[in-house]
Image 1: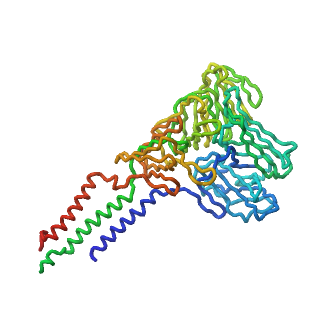
Image 2: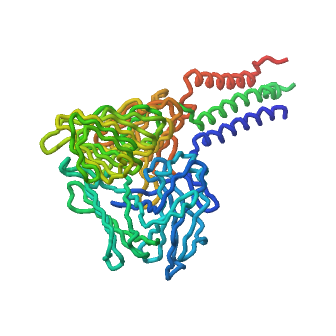
Image 3: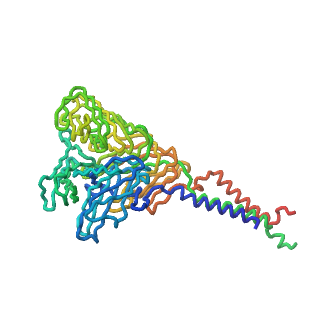
Length: 258
Length: 341
């Protein structure tokens, strides 16, 4: 028995070595669960289709570190509330850290009402990653079984300035080089009076293969819809790739509410 | 005392031999299980790499048919002679042009020479080769401010040296677009500084000169991208297969093409060189804490040599001597040749 302490110490030392070894290689990253959201860094899909929407902002107010953010969006009434799911997500517009946030509490959203998501303290993740306010994109949408997703423009703020506007900033990722991009708005029937329309292109006189936007990049445009009545509208993005006659397009629905 | 008793092991000898053997066995098991940091030489061809660095300069000088910069914070242009510039649809004759911007400001510079990019402070850089319907292109994303000085090249027939920008602030007012040609003989200068998140895109349609050397790497490298249909990490490695050499023991590991690869640097880890051709060819060297690879995220296993592999010849000989001494002691005791009181 007089030797047992030495053996015990050896076993303890060996145990410590074995337990510490994998710990040294553990990753300090991943999603954290908070009261109303999951937030952190994860692997999430981006730039999958030709064009993918990643954020629609109505107002995005600048904020400093240690802020508590609020996200406000209007959720219209739908016939089939039981199958409706509401999603509120945030990502980096230009992805460096794979930041991702998603709201988790479905039951708090109110129909036909302005909803406010909070708290969203920046000290939890955003400040620690060193993310800049103008590189954060927030996207809200709802989905009803068998129907196209409806996107809901959001206000992001720390202190509500109550600024109401019908001009929305859309952020998207293009998987291909684009030489031109046309943006049009239509209603359910495919027509809209006073419809805003945007056209962007690079100057082909400078280079016949010029690129307006580079493949894999995040781009944005602002569309003023204040002249339109509240309701659902289809936004269509139509892009042309240099040297390719087949265009790329994206059609999505947003709910416009003043 | 009987003969049998005389030939049996005395307790202290049995314990001594047992401890020697148990100690050696434990040391071997532990040495096989732990993988200490070591120096690795890694050559890999990849579609994408994100790295944290404190490099102060990026990319060597090079000519570009089109350089696209997103996230311009400050722009200063000096022309050799007055040029006709379209500012928000209005034509102006200018010999210089200054503007400010933000993360949504975007400029294309046609036929310019870049002197390389200065990086202000630590940055996270993502080098990416994008295959798309329009062909291949190379992009560099920077989380951290960068600046560059460009000079315009001489214009050629049908290919002028020019620029076009969007969403800039000129004299306090936001203008949707600004565009114009540089002096045809070339030599106009452009200084640009980006916002904290910027992106530079280079066309790969023609000869491309994008490369750099000696970039310190501060954080983990993941040679993966995300499966568009889900959340699975996919390999970004391209042919030829990645090769990892652990210098100390000269162990060479060749990866499978579709393997995922993660490199965790310890310190003094460098991107020795990268060149962009059919992919981003990287040569990395330095001390690594871990190198993991596998067929999928949950199949990742360390490629690091164990402490046993890394143990020097002297340590192995010492271990062998201790084992032999233990064995020898046992034989001597068994033969009754070990001195007795």
